[in-house]
Image 1 (cartoon, rainbow, N blue to C red):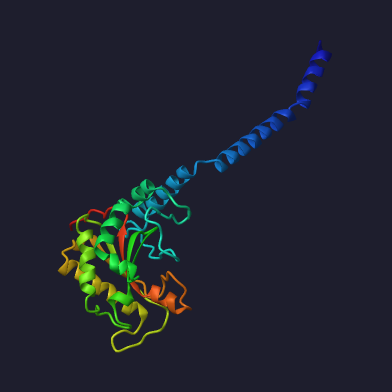
Image 2 (cartoon, one colour):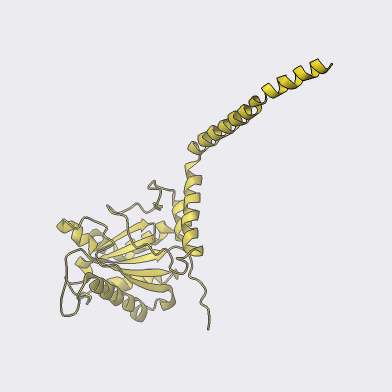
Length: 260
């Protein structure tokens, strides 16, 4: 009996490597199953998760209160009204996805704006697009400012007031952004493109608040100078596109102010 027990124990000890090998094969199988599943995920679900992570970083992280502080726009032609482009995903989404992402009925907002600024859109003085920042109404220098100046052109205020009339019906959170090309500027009033772009944004903001009655607690201002181009500054047409003031309808809600 002792000899038999010894043979059994020796056989068990010799086969223990199979337990580790079986565990390794199981883990390897699970890895490939997860990899296969991730490659076959529904694209809509991936967009939803990417969007939730992106918004979460700006509402709960160090950028909270700044509301999507990245000021760059997508380069290129005007986007489709139903497109909402995430920073990690360039594919088009459905209208319902875009509306959910920005908190704005994009198709309806575009329709209302086209009714009041149709001619300006055709003349390319104003463009409309959806970016990761939100819905953007871009006022080009051509129709609103003289070169190197921050005073509005004659008739420009009336165009902005028509836009403001549409925006005021919805109570949107709005960011007014000033942009320029990369040509250096140094005048008696402006010693940099930052100063010029900020002054232009301020001129538009004051018009929106004082003359059009938009809620000042829902409007912020940014001057980006030459550092948020939407086109190539090496061409004349590109520089024209970069000289602009953008009205950005920002996704989300403002944080509740804290009284001292």
